[in-house]
Image (cartoon, rainbow, N blue to C red; front, side):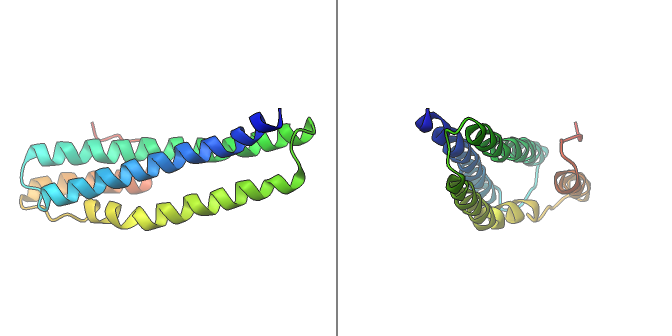
Length: 139
């Protein structure tokens, strides 16, 4: 039983880190491949990238909260020790640090130059939504 609760503390963080790393790799690839947004296809690809990032961020929030619920239930059933809260803190810090390290790729994607003024206006709308809303609503 103890191993199952420990897995409940660790696995959600592994999934959250996987989301972060995959998103960071996708951002980096987009920036390398596009460099300058010139076409509607570049913008459409940017929108898909932003949407996946937004959904991934929401999934990460849920995933990072799951271990706290597992911890409370594990404590109440005496399947976990109070000191095992350290696992949550350490993995939370690791997750935050990885997110911060990969933030530069997201910023680079949001700041890509755009040649066409109409595309730039649409890109700016997507960026504003990306930064200030939970869900993409530019469709």
